[in-house]
Amino acid sequence: MTLDAPNDAHRLKIGDGTTHYNDLPFIGMGGGAPVGDVVRPSGTSYVLVLADNGNTIVSGSAGAFTLTLPANAAVAFPVGAKIAYTQGAAG
Image 1 (cartoon, rainbow, N blue to C red):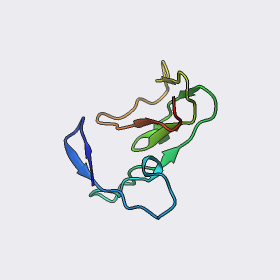
Image 2 (cartoon, one colour):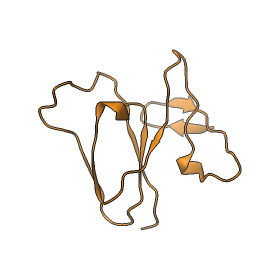
Image 3 (cartoon, rainbow, N blue to C red):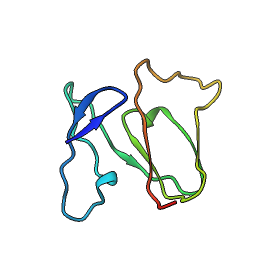
């Protein structure tokens, strides 16, 4: 089990024997909503989209990586939206 420090919520990951721990999704919690799908953008930047809510963005870049919240989006992110970021490369 791992601690989701910003929210003090305990969330669970279960390994499959081959996937790196940071790439494992969290198990969904209550309400049946999916939690923890992994998005692996290529390059050194990524613009967040509504579908990223509840996901983990994993950078493959060992250098600087830029996450951007779109300005003037047609639909706003909902209150309480959660998007995690993990650097998936050494650096």
